[in-house]
Amino acid sequence: MHTTLTRTATVDAPILDVLAERWSTRIFDAETPIDEAALASALEAARWAPSASNTQPWRFVVARRGTEAHAAIVGSLIGFNQTWAGDAAVLVVFAAVATLDDKPLGWAVYDTGQAAAYFTVQAHASGLHTHQMGGFDRDAIAEAFGFGDGLAAVTVMAVGTLGDAASASEALREREAAPRVRRSAADSLLVDA
Picture 1 (spheres, rainbow, N blue to C red):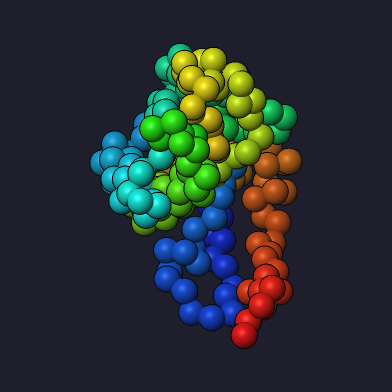
Picture 2: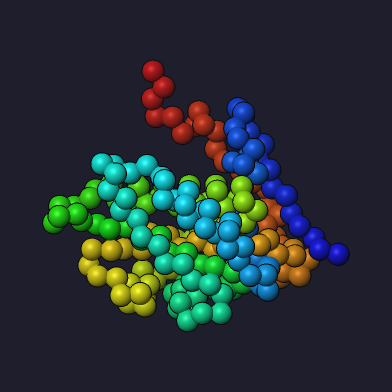
């Protein structure tokens, strides 16, 4: 029996189903290849994320399981991330261009984050699951993929098909089954005039 988890958020105000149903799994099917059409749609969504002055400061490294690039990214992961992320069919590095015409792009990381968010929502809408990670060695990524001084990794995203929770380690099952919690929107407001 294939055990899957559903993690629809309990929300305080109506939001799009694709947002309420999206969650970051750590249990990926280690055998199913990536749905290339769904991946292409997620990358296309990222392409259309907003950016200041249309600078589009994001760059992507897309690494499929079984490739040297995938192994290099897994090798850059820190701690617990190394125990599960290698099962993902694809690992994507989202990187930001720091300068344009020798001028700093102060918003590049923000815009790259928006591209990652657009990617995530489209991936979920297309039947893929994702998990973004900040726990990785940025210098190792830069060296593995030849990033110069003007390009910096922002996040690594695991992408693939949801795996069987019953076959996951107890530590993974515990994390996956933990309640989804967020502070209220009101608690995030500094000013609401």
